[in-house]
Length: 484
Ligand code: GLN
Image 1 (cartoon, protein in one colour):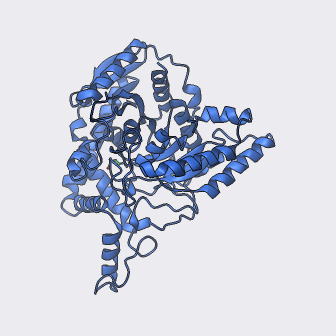
Image 2 (tube, helix red, strand yellow; image 1 turned 90 degrees about the vertical axis):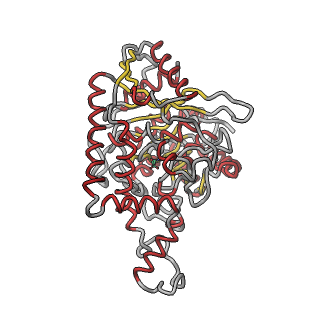
Image 3 (cartoon, helix red, strand yellow; image 1 turned 30 degrees about the vertical axis):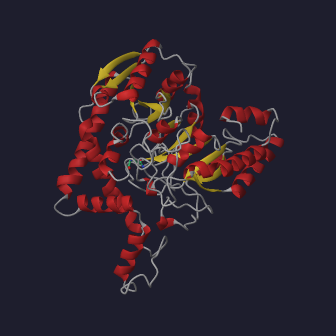
């Protein structure tokens, strides 16, 4: 199997070394063969993929421009709608849901010639940090099959690390792209909030949800983001700001004089090999001519509490639509003696259709929004969110970019944290701040832990955060780092 990149596919198609249909076939066959190891794909869509690939070949043969992603096999997280292709959110609730339309991101990827080959596994409704909350079973990390790939977009990270997809789409609400990218050793990008339309992304926490790419290198990630970004009339929170050429921002690695901030509040918690690798990466940036300095993000300690109030509040409202009436799972009328009553039908459908983590969040969210608690929890969390955003605004007056760990630890063993939700939530400490502020952030591989007799070497990612709509700067730094 060839580990293609967007560039190698473009060049191979131009030189007629292979056709888009051949590439799509290879990706589908590899996915079929490799998937039993990782459970990263929930389903493939060969008909759609081969039809799209044939169209690319037809355009190329006719000398028509086939798009920036022509012939590139792309996997899509199963919380992003694909017309006619089942989209389950890894939940029993939507086990048989076939969307009547495509998400805008998917539409734009295909308009750029991208080939959607399948839908990837994830935590149920994107709630989780390990991909163990899927109704269809956990995903395994291709780098160490007894470890989690991270979550919630674990399948999207795994298929790019493993090879059957060249790039993939994930969603990030509090770290679900960056953390699995770090755990699987690939690039993962969370763009500025509003940069990519959320139309067709099943809502978890609408004020925090982002769609973003996974790729094996920075330039591929930049190309995918460029293809999907931009205003969409179907999403009123999508930004009107013009989309610059992210690929053109990768200027060959000169980042001399770039000011980099390292948050003291993050580094004081970082321990072990992850901390050593981040320190080494920072040293490397210094060696490349960046001016590195310590900065302070003083509200960091309150971020997890604020995030888990805001995201659960929004989730409890967003998931109210899954009531067994219009679509989704409906409990059979025989489920209980009362099942013919409306309230029992709701209760049974939601009780049977949602998994434990989703239920926990709906209950937490309902609680923090309820009368008498709203001010104490939800309103307070919103104020903390504003303080966190202000920390970043202040920091970006002094520095161009912030560099930090993605996660306090590398991939952990499947089952290790599954019964301890608080410890699982703590693993999001470095990623949710950027999400709450709505700024662009990404994970770029920065090495691996040392293999021991019991543990294999595990990938570790470095996080880069920039100010709103400064993706170009972020990509430039990541690209330079990748090539150093
Ligand atoms: N791990 C975080 C959570 O469980 C983030 C999830 C996400 O970004 N979708 O909420």
